[in-house]
Length: 137
Image (cartoon, rainbow, N blue to C red):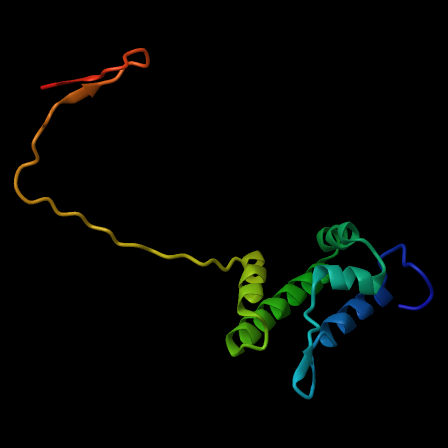
């Protein structure tokens, strides 16, 4: 935005925020891609305000809350699509997607079956001051 640092919420701020989201698209030039992933930090820089101001406006203004939600949705969709296509580094995309609730879990189903009787062999008593512990049956 031209004209210096905005100090208050206005229709111009709303318009510029929507423009930031609309134009946050990657640009391909030959075999290179310039990444323009929409981010909270990018929006704050574009509007020349702090992140804390963005979060304050998100709480105070329903329309700005919609802007932030749209930004986050576009960010997640872009990360998923480009991470799967290999346009983005999959590891970086995976890390960034954790901010959107995505997780990387592995479930291990481990079953142990015992056959026969399990025998009791004794108790080993170890005292911190005993250099030679004994096994008692």
